[in-house]
Image (tube, rainbow, N blue to C red; front, side, top):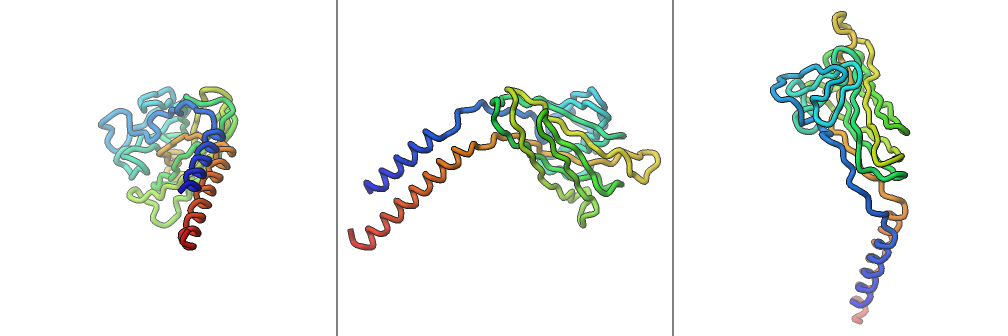
Length: 226
């Protein structure tokens, strides 16, 4: 028992000494787009300058705010990043630590009603970006089963805030002449979290290794009758 207590104490000390400095909580509002105007029915189309979806600004083109038209990845609501044309949204993330790394995760699908078959969007901050795509020809892609896929990218904070943006890169490809660019990528469940520092992971692994060794020692002593 003394050996176990010693190793547990040592592991705790290592974890404490190697842990990253405390960081403020990262704040991203309304990542699943649940908070916004009520009573929109199937969907509502919002154009550049609109701030009706809590936390987000429509900063280019137009988007469709989806409620009951198709199944969201999380909750009840999601976005079609093309309203009548390719649209873009943005939000300022707060609570960042300068120089720290952060992981942006989000889910992408595609409007299954019309082409193009490959729906694309760009997610980006000031220093990092990701071009994401979704193929609506995959079997089962429908309003009831959107086939949502998670994507992610990492950025390094250059200050306490960062502008996070998503922009559709679908500018045409529809077979509907009245709406040539109205069927875009779908977006839902955006989140941002800090990436643990390497030293923190190393200290955690050392701690777990120490606990494993203590367990091994205890079992050996019990086996020998000590």
